[in-house]
Length: 339
Image 1 (cartoon, rainbow, N blue to C red):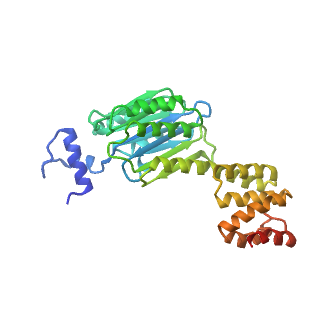
Image 2 (cartoon, one colour):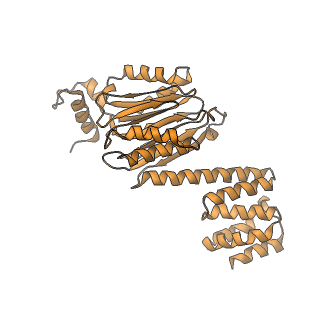
Image 3 (cartoon, rainbow, N blue to C red):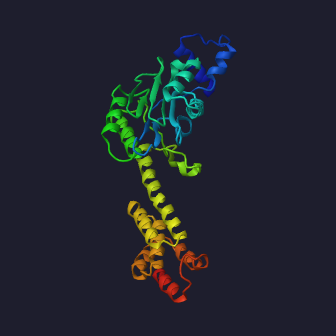
């Protein structure tokens, strides 16, 4: 049975039009091609000029495409590396941009040094919006890219050459934040035919325009669908959920600051996005209690307790942490909703 590395060598030899009969390939060529992974896909790298946000979005018929294709760093840039993918384009491209190189210069420098450049497809954008892409001459058709203002779209092994122009058109005409616009580009690619093999995984990464000094805050979205018959639909669901939990986090911070009005606004916003999520309904109810709006909270507690009785078990523990008033009569009233 041919190993994946061996199969990659055979494919790479065919693309490079050299012999790969057993024993004929050089050690150098074997070392160069053994790690090739045929991640044929469509993707977008983009920047929002208003917020400075940078991002990558991708879909492929390949398991867990996100960790090897999508790279981004706040205040630096974003990279998509695909086709017979060399993941090192991601960290190396970001390092060059971090040191001051423009995205086009960083890409040109790495492509020039890559002996397998003809089977690569890479796009880079930097923090000022300078952008460029490379599609190797031997990327599997249909393959190509389109560079526009603050974005590049690229695709290979597509059903037709309409895919990347459709992505560009969708990105340019869609309103909303960067995540919304990149998702629109992915949907347009699928509508235009998408990957000729079908679909399997997708990912979206969005980082802030300027680093906060706290890297965990810089990644506004870092979402992956590793294996799904409908990866784009699932990615959209996760984006909505991420937005909802961003409101939840803001609500928790407001609670810490004893700003109950702000907490209520944030929890209500989260619940509006994901109306059947017990967690969000519960903390909305807690916020109402802390604003002395107990009557409004009780129907929410009733819904949550019906969804999962353990929320009723949790509730008496909250006064000790200062999250509910230490009032036995109030607690009895709340827990009555569990019955």
